[in-house]
Length: 241
Image 1 (cartoon, helix red, strand yellow):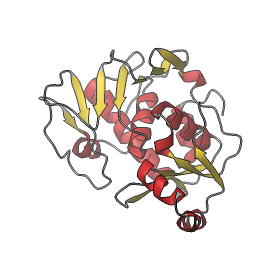
Image 2 (cartoon, one colour):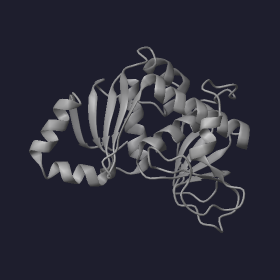
Image 3 (tube, one colour):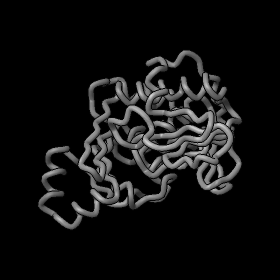
Image 4 (cartoon, one colour):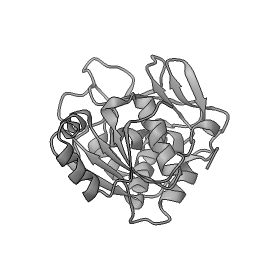
């Protein structure tokens, strides 16, 4: 799928809607599994929030102050779904999505709780901030309207280095059930790698840093996880984009 848009990618992963596409293992023992249909649902809801709440469109810059995480992938895909640009390590943005908002933060802010079962953000919020944990669930499961994607416009800005929408999705060599240590990769690498696996019709088993460290130190436990999750490829560290 070279040159594919996120809408194209979502069409691919929902051809078999019940198939697991992203399985997340967090430090507190949580396991979150998103099928193709559930991943699309999360992306659609978040896209609707971005469009309806912030008028997100080509030219809109959405800063993601989030670690490598399944929610980070959802927010990035939603940003790209409406043609906007994900900003990492940059100060110029229109919307800030963060898991650590400061009370004094100004502008359009979305507080993103990382815990799987969070129904609200647990902590003080800046005035006017949107609590993603509660707000996202109020939006429709289907994208009501999203602006056309300008394929030549920036999709990803990492410290001034830009990737256009047309070059965002680079399929992995093999579509497989792929194990990824999220903590061993920067956010940009994690996002590009995840898109590549999905674009090759694969799926992801993502370990946060603490879980990966524990399992790498316990080969038997790692082997049990690889077997139970039917992992076919162990990338160790997500390769650099």
